[in-house]
Image 1 (tube, rainbow over the protein chains, first blue to last red):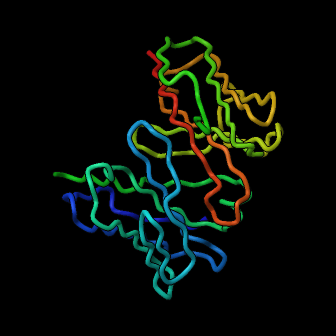
Image 2: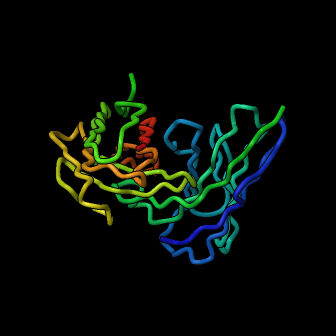
Amino acid sequence: LAKTTQPISMDSYEGQEVNITCSHNNIATNDYITWYQQFPSQGPRFIIQGYKTKVTNEVASLFIPADRKSSTLSLPRVSLSDTAVYYCLVGPRVVYNQGGKLIFGQGTELSVKP
Amino acid sequence: DTAVSQTPKYLVTQMGNDKSIKCEQNLGHDTMYWYKQDSKKFLKIMFSYNNKELIINETVPNRFSPKSPDKAHLNLHINSLELGDSAVYFCASSQETGQGTGYTFGSGTRLTVV
């Protein structure tokens, strides 16, 4: 699975848009990019997944440039409750769909302040 | 209706003791996992079971023994606990969804060995 690099921490204020970038220079052709969110004292939970261009759901948007060597998770108008660790994972879709080991990096600790 | 539930939530015990952590999922998933999260927030897979059969066994000391009585349960027994075993242990389950959203994690068991 491709190695990922993310900022260790980020600070933001309520109401701002937050963009977290993940680098994955060695991404393979069949790899997907998946983001997980982990609140304190809870397990990680799936946020969004994409392969190329842009994906949007009710929680976030995921921007993937044409070369796919990086991706950006965008959280619109964050609130205090968005304070969490955000993990970027890269791997074949079969890992996520059919069961396989997820490999988590250090993640980005986002702190949202009033 | 908790999808993946673990017990206990907190466990404090002395070195050398034997302890168990229980996990149950009511999602009907075929695959269950144990992950360990250390103090630096890295999440690493330990074991994976599919329909009661062990399919992933990372390099984990043999003091750790998973047991799956049925596909809805995956328990973790730890013998001769050591200080380095202190961590948060997460149980998870997954099922093929076609959308990468198939993983569900429990809330974790914080194990402290003193």
